[in-house]
Image (cartoon, rainbow, N blue to C red):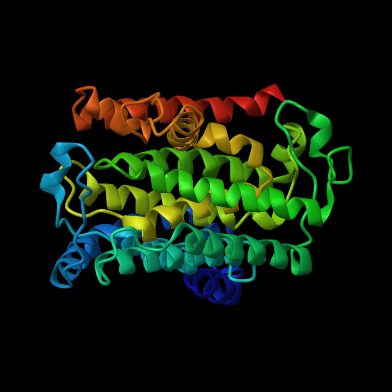
Length: 380
């Protein structure tokens, strides 16, 4: 751990009583804000430096994207573009977090573990689709089972060792920030809440990953907002002032979020239109799992729809389309459709919008949602 070497060894051993400004300057390593910034820079550099090599390796392995015939015609030219680039995101996040975070933090390892497990489910799905040539990858039940198992493990660790507050913290309702207050629901009921959050967030990001640069751009914005919210939740002064459930154990999650911000920017360098690589399910499920896990650990579950508003809208568009289609299906006749195609970004494609225009406009909406999530801090 770079943190332990620079601070625990060099500063505490030599810098504390030294007159050297070099050793004294190492004291800054203890501050989570500094390490968060360094984690973001480190993951960005790792992504940029290794991105080209990862893309070439994926191309050599013939891990090319398959394109469905029923999709927009313009997408057919993307067939064969290297996919499973999410390994670059996860690798960058893991390495930079390990370098800059304190390793004695349980919440940090929960976040890294959950992200890795969701990535494993996505990797299996991509592997089956690309290598085994089964177009749909894992079955719905198999994917759901993997996601539920991850949610169960997150809940189990929190229940056994996490000293986790089992209250539901609702924005705008100050009383719900009290750990043993009116919103305490206990660990058993909270498991279903955790499962809903993790499955919803992971699948929502997965559905959004359909245009060059879209999912990773929204991830950068959402993770930037979540980084700020995580820091506030872990700081006693800010948490008390803003009536947020204070959890000091969440401090190192800020470093993890910063690493995700940097990795998102690095991947966007290669995923910007026209994309040189796609993240695949290994990336999208991991990102969604990371968002949901951090929201759970910092008691920001009810802010997640604001933080990742675009992801939620994309998921809702699919749910609405499927529900209306099934409800209006009569006597062998096909049901009605609300949108020309879902997820929602495909509806705008089918309406004649160019891909970059859709991405930029969705990014604007994502920024507005992120600002809205931050504005709730003063409304509690």
